[in-house]
Image (tube, rainbow, N blue to C red):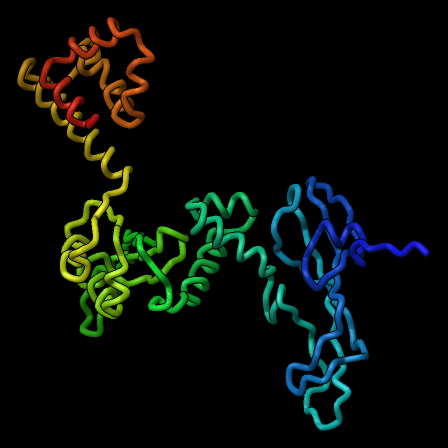
Length: 334
């Protein structure tokens, strides 16, 4: 006798793939999205006594935010309220809740996980992730804040490459102290990350050496000795904390800041030469000013792009910029 060996779920529920739910209905809506009606599969237990419910009290529909599947999706949950038939339990009825949609939640757990993964793992901006998933910036920020509260036990994580960087999470604010004076609030925080896995290890207030040093001081000697490389931006405060607590670790500066510093140096040399030679700022008919973006792009993309031009033409362009400018660019390329 033939017996199917596939999934017991129907095709729509398998494609939607929300654990613990099945698709009841799906329809197109005028704005081009789709409305998907779902309901939970298993009867829940009473949150007070734990007895599994068997009788439905009522039903209502609740809108949920979920991950976009092949485009925008409007998810509607046919949520049921159940009776608790346990005589000794004081709770008469209760609303169902699942792992994907906990109590008082308006978004699925997998949506929040995708938001956190898109920001932390992929390194995308919170505003970009919000637009891609059709949610607000505040929801992405709330998901990130909740994820930081679930940080792992740092001492149990084997870290060999550590990343340290500061983040500005809001605009500058002023608040009134108890004495009636106004005080400036700098909304900076420093994040420490395991560069091997992308796991956030800790978030501390401020961006000075004290904040980073206090976090490192809480680590054990064996944990600190395992760290081989630390990636930072050109920050003297971070470097001071690393010299104190991680003297054996090699310090690496990220590429973005290196390229920016190199380009700033090339621009400074070009501007100085323009004022020295012409007594004024650069103009569009000056070779150094006319080829300024070429200098910066070659610093960013490397010398391989230099040879896309004919060697004669490229040599003529850089020779027109002056020997000092060419020397500065060659120094940056190294």
